Image (tube, rainbow, N blue to C red):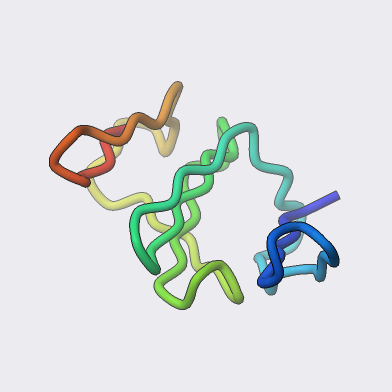
Length: 78
């Protein structure tokens, strides 16, 4: 499983570089930034269009996000 990305409108897909055991429930993109919610494992963040991800849990209670929502202002809320 893991995260896959396409740079050609979905014609082809490649695996993104993610921490081991990453199976996100939800992914939200805002510009070149991508957030992936992996449930109890917390959030993953990418600033390179989803080519690679790092764990991003600062400020989240219990390293758990239930939903990701992108607001009209472009901000992503967990």
